[in-house]
Amino acid sequence: MREWATTGDRGTPLSACKRSAHTIPVCELAICPRSCLRSVLFFFFFTSVLYQPYPKNWPTYTPAGKLATWLEFYAKSQDLVIWTKSRPVPTPTYDYSTRRWTVNIDRNGDTVTLHPVHIIVATGTLGKPYVPDLAGKHLFKGKAFHTSQYTNGKPFAGKNVVVIGTGNSATDICLELSVHNVKSMTVVQRSSTTVVNTDTVGKILGQMWPEDIPTHISDFKFSSIPLFLMKKNTSEQAGQLWVEEHETLRKLRKAGLRVDLGDGDSGVYPLVFERLGVMDVGFADFADTGKVKIISGVELVRFEENGIALSDGTILKADVVIFGTSFHNIRHSVVDLFGEETIEKTSRVWGLDEEGELYGCYRPTGHPGLWYGAGDFHNSRFGSKQLGVLIKAIELGYVKF
Image (cartoon, rainbow, N blue to C red; front, top):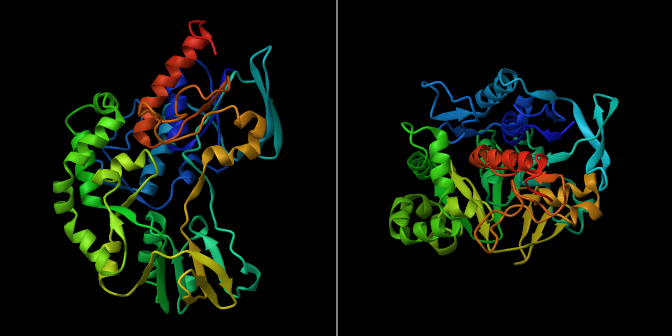
């Protein structure tokens, strides 16, 4: 056993990239690869996977279900070894003398012990949900939960709903709640949010990954541009971006939201590599109707019996509080699996280092035989090739770690 990884839009291309050299099991707790995606839309020219391009008539905006079905087909057509309903059991150990791991896999109730040379954590950039630890939670009579636990708004008809946060998940949930006759909806924004319209993002991605150029060529061209230089270039085009986003930002500001175009007005895309951003898919239009109240520039203080208290003294009446407060970094979350001693030896994951390169992704982490595969489809397509070559070089003795 040479490598072991996880599935999803990062794990499946990684395993496909390595398939020709070694058999690599991919472990996933879900019942099938398609279960890893949620109900969102994806740009087709950006979400292509390695070695298997989409048909020419593939829709520009791909529903999550359709993309999930494609990933399931992709896994089968690429002969990938995927163990569903499987998960690693704490704590894998590394033997520095044999340079191999010992890891136990709970495979649908049966324990299987593997001794891989490499483990690739391809579970994405985001880890466990982050929920502020507020005083008084035991007093709150309503329901409070993270956006990751949201399924639909039907149970909240006639309820006073407070949504904490203005990221993609929070605003998407607001749009979904709007068709379920909630009694009131309030959004609490703690700090300014970088927002760019979906059409603008689509235009940018379409320029980077044109339909008439093979994806792997566009990947190479995009990855050849240092991210700091990309940020500088987009900042120099800030005037044009403000013009293009004027209507979206006007509606959001009118509704009370504090918005910006990122550090140096460089937009959402460079920000993705640092701390993510928001792509507006209709919330600006909804906010402009006045059907949602937005409170900005405040902090959460505590739960009350029938609501939540804010730092400006406001007490928001609430039957339901939904926390769109993002997630812990994946490095923080895998401590539970690998233990602090192992993870402390690895680098941070995501964000830009002093050279403008992504921390920890598809590169040495600081611990032998342990790798992170994070990011989006492009990162997976391009980075998995790099990592595949690097691991092959290690196996051949050309590189030592």
